[in-house]
Image 1 (cartoon, rainbow, N blue to C red):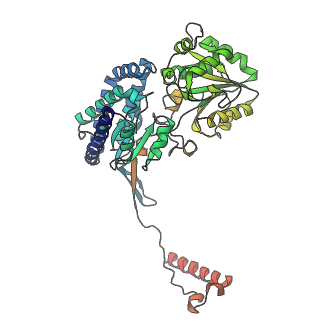
Image 2: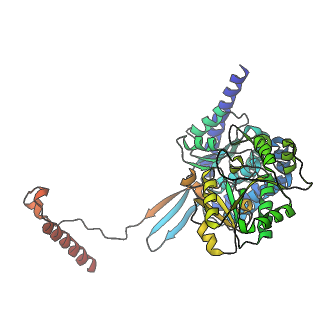
Image 3: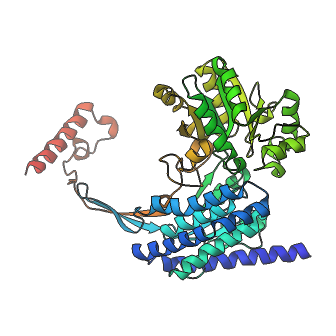
Length: 492
């Protein structure tokens, strides 16, 4: 009876949130650029003021990651994001093509539903709130149950900051009684116009099957290829920097390292020097058994955990200061568990003969759960980077930490915590999602070409003949007559 009551309350709360946010959004749609910018600036200010407390709350509640890195993510999702999107035109006339006489006018999508993962709860909530308001949309969040408190707090802070700066009340909402029934209700309710889904594969698929426009993000399984011309010391540093950032909770983090035989020993030595521990086959097996449940599903107990925690749980001894654990794999697929995505401080390690074999392994890894997402390559050969640009991914990250590169912190990509995987990965976009993905475009198009009605009587019509009686010469004569008539009118 208690569960039944909870579900009813959860459904009712969801319906109320959707109705309230929809009403608020119809008012927000009337705001101008200055009003919207004032609201966003206050949201950024409040996000910065609470960056540390939200990070602490997220780590305490989920057990995932590090406070200092989640603090940076909160900063990145607010201040860095704002600097990037500030010049974006999302209101009124956004393009006026004088030559073709087409005027483009931005209109909001309406009410968004934001699905929030447990791995990056507060930063994703801040990010989605800001891009929603920038494009004059309302948003209601469905939090992951294991990250409810921190997601709810981030959403409340963003809503209060927006309202304090002039936004309509309830423009940003969040389910406080999460349930699958509530999430499904929000996905399908009439008020919601679009879904932005960041989370597990099943949740993203559910979003796409809800009968609404959706922007979903599939998993990453990022291969990192250290090519023979690479600066090995820098490449290893980048990989460790990325993989240890928030203990590997971002889907753009590296999952496997691929090296050529000619530099294998050099790379292994450099990893060891910088804090990598190469597990024995027996140790690799122990760690893999702990990391996964139900085949290759990640065990939540070990998401975003330090190398020391993972090693201790597996009963293996590692040197003090170890940052990442590496396990050699001879293949890809269910018999090689580390070939799957691991949102924690563990990497698979592959040795190949040459770049062609590296390419083959990268493709297999991507098809093993990361098609369309990202690929990392470390090389001093621009031609090699372009060879890998033909692989089935939409972010080819060169000589940079993959985590920071994928989200736009160390590259020129748009700052985002929703990274599209394109149709190859089952996503509606291959972009880093920005406010420009959350607008509709009206087009006012003026006539610029004269289109004359065909008034030339055809021989066929005059003679009331059937189409089978028309000769090719007759057809060409009619066509030529029409062309000559149009040219004559054009000259006049």
